[in-house]
Image 1 (cartoon, helix red, strand yellow):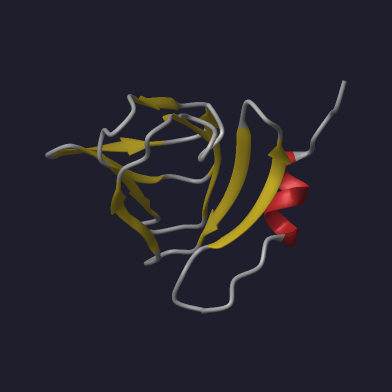
Image 2 (cartoon, rainbow, N blue to C red):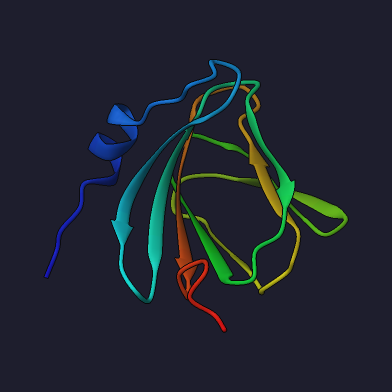
Length: 111
């Protein structure tokens, strides 16, 4: 068993570009990946797709998530699920937004 502290991991996340969210790979296995995002106000992860199922868990803060042609406001405790190849993105509007992204199966593991 492994136990992770998502808030501490997000606090240690780094970015090479100050206009982009900070990220840290929290867990990486053959079956799943967990990436922490620390998104400062005004930053975003542009809408994109994945061949995997993507689950976003809002750890702290509030913001907006996009899916297809709609957007939703989210806050702590919200879980957002995207099917494979479903467009998704996220942004922090007025405060820092911390999100855990669970990606399964792990990107690149599908034949």
